[in-house]
Figure 1 (cartoon, rainbow, N blue to C red):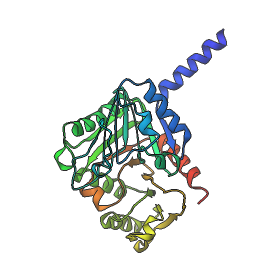
Figure 2: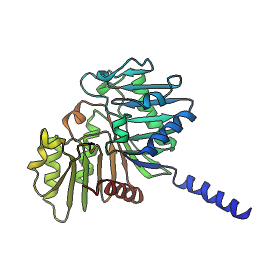
Figure 3: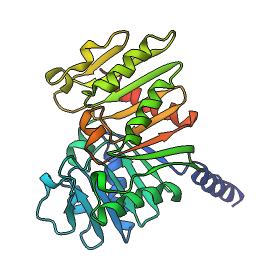
Figure 4: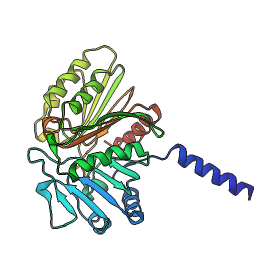
Amino acid sequence: MRRKIILNIIIIFSSMTFPYKIFITPSQELFYFIKEKSFLSENIKFVSLSISQPFIDILDSRKTEGFIENDLKGNLNYILPDRNYEGYLHEKFIIFNNKSVLFGTGNFTSGSIFEDINLFIYSEDIKIVNLFLKEFKNFASGKFGKKKEIINEEIFTKEFGKIKIVTGPSENIYNTVKDFITNTNEFLNIYTFSFTDSRIAYLIEKLSTRKNIKIKIYADDWNLENINILRYLKGVEVKFIKDNKKNMHLKILINEKGVLIGSYNLTYRAREKNDEYLFIVFNNKFKEEILEKIEKSLQKY
């Protein structure tokens, strides 16, 4: 009996201390996690560039409301198209019961969850949830793109310590990426699906001229077939992830200070046109967790 009580205390303490969860895809675990959370939730709000089966069936229309890119709108009356006609609705998150949120680099499609390499974070920190609710409220009010209320907030959370959430299109979202890069002193790892922004390329090349800073870029081989700005970078280690069965769909920057993750590809459209978000964490333990998961996922390449 005493042993059972101690075990229960340990379980409760663990869940209180580390309530966030990290998923890297391909992942059946993430699929079943979303399925279970959706089944237990009375209200679901989601935003995604696109959505497909089996997630259409999981997100019960009687309790779900969501937004996807206008060009991809189907015949589902509980899913509304975006109104950002200049750019894409490129954010990816699900809010459960207004009490927890799952967000990351992938869409809620079979390809993103079962095939591509993506990273998702689940959080029950109400401060984080409220910021995503604020963004969803923008969309529910018909405010997209440059018409919406931009989020640019730094808060302290129990889960991660100091974090920052920024949305775009805005100067704030570009400046956040810029500051993360230019404030690097030891190393910078970049994981991106698409890299076509010459402004970001200039910042990275300038950073490479400083002594004792190691810069590595891991990019999907999509870049080889399209605007390959990466081939012009000097002093930077670039590796293209080639896999005919999946995309390297991560959108993450990591340096010695923290992690920047979001929906934001390093492109002009992400900077100037799209509805995007960034989530920045200044936490060494979290940084090491993310690095370990990504390195394990990419080790065969």
